[in-house]
Image (tube, rainbow, N blue to C red; front, side, top):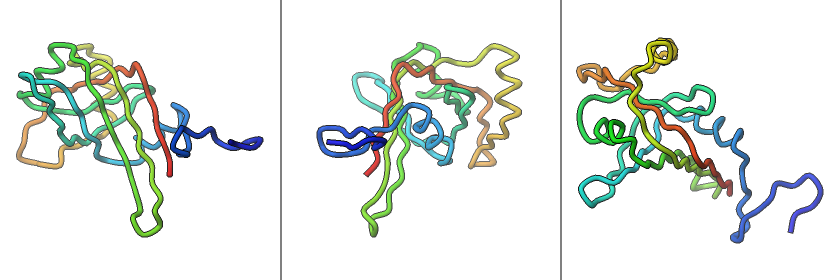
Amino acid sequence: MTGPGAAPTDHAGLAVLGSDECLELIRSRPVGRIAFARDGDIELLPVNHCVLGRTIAFRTAGGSKLTAAYDGAVVAFEVDAYDARRRTGWSVLVKGRADLVTDSSLLARLDDAGLGTWVPSASRAEWVVIHPDEISGRRL
């Protein structure tokens, strides 16, 4: 049960976060994880990312993440943080579709976002965006 002005809670008593707060939390962390189906298995890979409006974007090279984007695959994207000593934390989950970015104006905006690669020798020439269908989050 919650009082006036208190955040709603889920069945386990965790605070339910609104989508705007979820997007702010995603922005606050440099790395998230993207999950997608590939050849009958689930892939879960770390990516550094940026957020433009309600769209999550990351750079990638050829491979499974790019293949998922070409296919317009259903994906999940997760970011979290926790403090084990204080027993506090949060988790945000985005479900949506991945797409390869081909629009020149969006490419320019993404390039201006300043997202660099963590591996300088790796070419990450392609941008992938996640168009959210669902954004949910919980806080301990």
